[in-house]
Amino acid sequence: MEATAAGGKIIAADWTGLVRVWTQDGKRAGDLDSNPPTIAERIDALNQRLATLQALEPKLNADRNQAAANVACRAAKVPPMVWPRSM
Image (cartoon, rainbow, N blue to C red; front, side, top):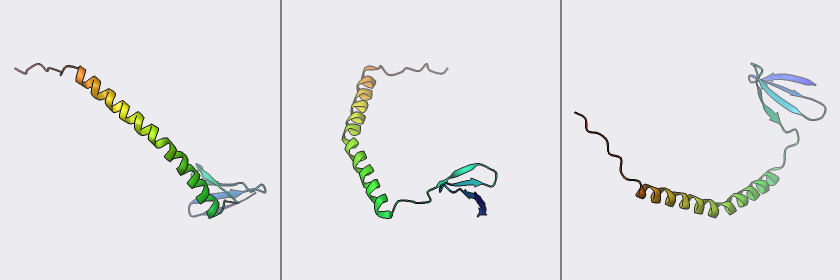
């Protein structure tokens, strides 16, 4: 294992390729990938995630519209609140 301090962070790595980062006060800041995916691979993964989320959009919009309609319907059935007059 080797460690170094860089820009206020402590970075350590081991022979397995695991790279971890800590702040100077000892809090874990995260991990780094020693063999990150290529830009093309990242773009493909993000495009797949985008397609998944876009497929969910119509149902989420329908659910939101139904919830708004339910609120409006219930609000129409509730009589307005009458506050006592101040003397």
